[in-house]
Length: 92
Image (cartoon, rainbow, N blue to C red; front, top):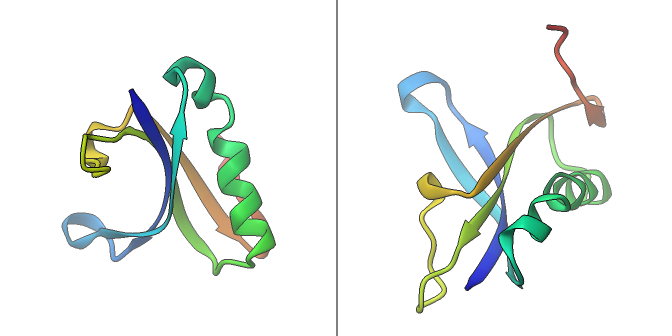
């Protein structure tokens, strides 16, 4: 089965929130092995391309025969809150 990493940025809030996909990178291999590299991959893109402050979602998805995906059925999702050129980690 083919998979892909997807990096999206959230716009808006609450029920009006929507995500714009910045990157979609097709991958091959078992999903178990791909999950571990998801956050590293997303952070590298955000850092090197100097993305704006905001909430980003990195997702591991399955691709269908046409190379399409449904983000709502992601295998893994990593939220990244990016502020002042670094990841913001809220205190719990």
